[in-house]
Length: 580
Ligand SMILES: Cc1cc2nc3c(=O)[nH]c(=O)nc-3n(C[C@H](O)[C@H](O)[C@H](O)COP(=O)(O)OP(=O)(O)OC[C@H]3O[C@@H](n4cnc5c(N)ncnc54)[C@H](O)[C@@H]3O)c2cc1C
Image (cartoon, rainbow, N blue to C red; front, side):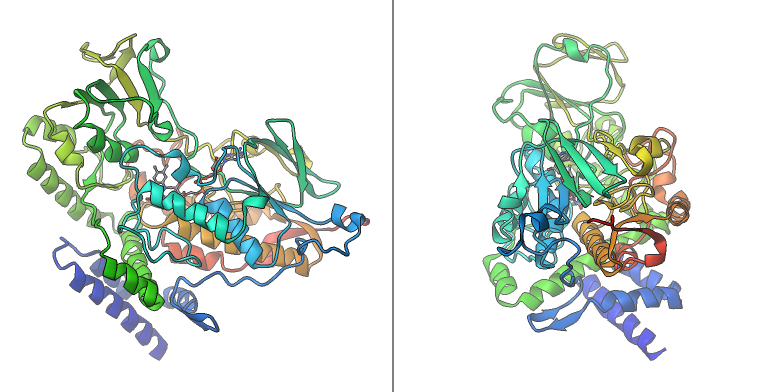
């Protein structure tokens, strides 16, 4: 009981601090978290907090507040660094891991393998550089919606972020710096587009094929391919007839000069919200084709002062506390998304207030106020979106597109909009997950067939019938309220725990039990039914059949807890082949 009171006291102090910092927020997020902490203060919830706070550790290297660096111990399941004394035979049978992708997920996995003393891994990347999302999305204004102190690895703090919400170039540089610091370059093979991965039941190895005809074998396969990696285009009649310039926001053509042009932007999602305000002052006319409006809230962004950067550098504990406070502030929002949807209405009022303040024309303003429940689609943050909408050279067209001609877009009301360039801000093929890779598992089962009703995985990481396949940022691990990097770190920790289990049991492979997976997935889907994402809008979170294979329906700390350590009873273990 005393412990419970202490924990609640800690929460109250955190939340009160946050409240004092932002007294003018309409209904402070912190209050919501506090309300939840009190009404949900049952033993299970407190057990979660205790376990979670146990990550606040004092080590020989320093004091780490939560989220603490991953604590993984060296494993010999994957071979130690090859030794000079190894015979060729030993080298040939050395277990090996392949990681697909070099975004935040792939790099995190690689670094943590190295930190655990495991060096026999290869990273395959289809592009010619690292960075994933932050390599591909170079559009003007590309930036993170999560504060950089949290949207970075817990084990690799960067004290001199230039602003609260990092810009694309700085995040990408951070990732490249990680590659250098952890000496990952020699592990990466670029321009290797993985097209197939087949599980060999005899050797318990994955056979991995790349588009250029190369083949690799590995004991462990980690996919870190991201969810927002393949640009999505709408299916509009006449698209291919357009003779002007066309590109997707995730493949921005920086050689093309938009100055003075008539430009059509199709889509008003997270990317468009960022680049439209940047290009509007440069173009002659901007035609914004909107299927449905986005809820847009102010972004509490600013540059860090030099003294703040040096304080973070000289007092690493301050940096950790700052990160921790950001985490809890963001985390409190999960309540509104998954439990107390009504709380989001306050935010809707705030968005409407900002629109009224910035957009003078009431007709235009009405067009950008959504007609669906706030939160059902991703809530966006921007300080210049409504100001851009207010520009005289920007038209919002929400009548729907009928077809595209050689030099124009024709909307459903028959209006013809002549344009020089079309920019697709239409997002990504998020719900397809690993579908471009032909993955076959135990007994030749194909992953696309197994996922006919939508992608699903145990803890978003393992799939029954696909032994030793581990997914990062897999099904139901996306967030609307906090940092994906935090989720990725949880998954990496879980993968390492699995490797330790394989080693301890001297097994070749592990396969999650089908019932375990079904029970988990059903639980997730049940919880999603009560979330705001199920309130009736069409969004990239859901498939055509209405299933949500994308989002995690709760707190990230509950996810962190559930992935702390593998439960051996959840898996079937396969013994090593006799001559391995
Ligand atoms: C514009 C944008 C803004 C975002 N903002 C935020 C934000 O504010 N906060 C947040 O938490 N998240 C945000 N995200 C989500 C973001 O994708 C994740 O936070 C994170 O970057 C995912 O990292 P990842 O490594 O899993 O995937 P990615 O960064 O997508 O990296 C996947 C890598 O795998 C490679 N790959 C894929 N398939 C293959 C293949 N078959 N063979 C070889 N290589 C392959 C890709 O080339 C890529 O390098 C944003 C995403 C986008 C697109």
